[in-house]
Amino acid sequence: SKMDRDQVLAEIRKRKIKLWLEPYLIDGTNPSRASLETLAATFFEEGEGTTTTSSTTIQSQGYIADILQDLQNHALEKLRNKPCLQIKIAGLKSDEEHLNSIKFENNNNLWASLVERSYQKGKHSALLTLKMYQVRRDLSVENFLSELQGHLPKDVHSLRLVHRGKVVDSLKAWIVSIFNPPTIVLCLVSYLPQAKVSLIDSLRRAAGRLSRDFDVTDQSGNNVSMTPIERKSFLTALGLHRLGRQKSKHPSESLPYLLQADNEWNINIATQWRITVDNYGLLQLDISWTYLLLESMDNLTDAMQRLEIAERVLKKQVNSNFCTLALVQAEMGNPVPPLSAVFCRLFLLQGAAYRYVGNVEKSRERLDWAYALCCSLRNVCEGAQVKRLVEALTAEEFHVISALRRTNGNIDQAAALIQEDAEQEAMKAETRNKQHHLGLCQNKTDYVDLDMVGQVQTVLGLMCTSSLADLDYQVSTGLLRLANNDMQKCIDIYQDVEQNAEGVSRRVRDLDRELEWQGLGKKARNLPIHFKVDEIALATLISMGIDKPTAERALKQADNNVERATSWLTSHQP
Image 1 (spheres, rainbow, N blue to C red):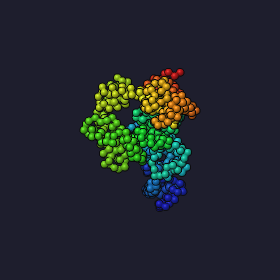
Image 2 (cartoon, helix red, strand yellow; image 1 turned 180 degrees about the vertical axis):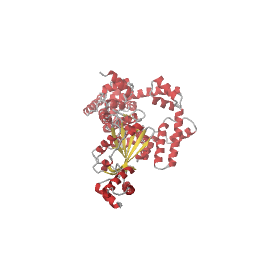
Image 3 (cartoon, one colour; image 1 turned 60 degrees about the vertical axis):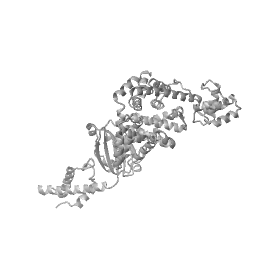
Image 4 (tube, rainbow, N blue to C red; image 1 turned 135 degrees about the horizontal axis):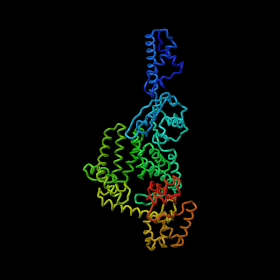
């Protein structure tokens, strides 16, 4: 006689055998017939004995193995019909030796009733996907990451989970309480030592110390008003964004910085700045681009919304017909404006995003636009020209490329433009330093609008001068500070003190004392007037434990280049 299906099922339940786990299922996807036949032989020997003939034994064991395989298929089908949690492990090195060192042995029941695994090799990295069915309710984020790292190659230093465009920081929380299947979670692999991952917190602390000395300027180099909290978050966001871009060759290590920068923008910075400042739009481009490099753009569920924000912000910086005219020029084979490079990237990402949502027609249209702009831009900045100008002017490569694009590839005009830009930046720095020397206005956010000084002097009958040492200049700038750059209020205050210079000076001194008491006193700078330290580079060095004066000196020596500044510090610090 043979064991029937009910007997086999009863035996499985009695022994608490789970046919959807190893060794009966390999890698969570492939049934192991050999393991099922071994189990069938055990059932036969214990249930039927060994007195039957050899042919009967083989027939009976094969029959039981068939039942076991049928029961296994049924169990897998039931599990796969339930919602699953997908963990996509992105950023793994794609070489075969590295991937072969990934081992998952008898671990499926640690995380879920069933875990299926699959690999996808890209050009620069590999993607490992885990499909987890019926996740354990007591599995925490921390334990999962710790156990997962134990199965990955030894040079993987850290893992981070990203869900819906945000880094998951709740390590103690249960997996099932955060992620409600069916959902997809991105797990980013970092090959950096753990100490460097804490750079985010270090940069945030450095931004807090620097926020008092940090100003935001518009496209003309003029200071704009921001609250202290906004300045701190703005500086933090810019620093995180820069760190993310510096690591762009390693997308899985870049993305956490970019997402943290996005978080800073959305929590403490007013909506008006997100709408008007192009940094926020560029950040959305970089986040979308990084997801694309990780071959996980389908995980960025709000990709279209992010790209719409980027397009809206970028189009505010140009004429309403800019894109149309640029595309017409590109199709005619003519040079296009340098800002077309940003829109080239935008159109490329929109093409990919439309493809993921199934809009093939829109996808093809955007990709064609991106290709046309890219060809035109590359034609005006050949590699030999870029190298020649970089060496001749000791300029940064991106400055040279921008100048060549702005001059339609004319190398002489580009060189003159680079020099002109340097002179204009020096003038802007001089204006900002003068504003710092004068101090904040009464509202504690604005600085003196230097363009209004001459108007005040003319209206009030003061001598027209721009020297800080002249009394009339001190009176006019003092009135602007007291009046928050309001002309009518300047007149009212001047009349209120009976047009007395000492009366204005007295009120200005009172304002300075109040600002000093609140920690907002005048910010005299020890650097030459023509050199302006890059605040983000400064924050990066301070986050490494370098004191501010030393960091400023190093950046001056390295012309604001963080890598060269670090090298200078290494050779000059005791």
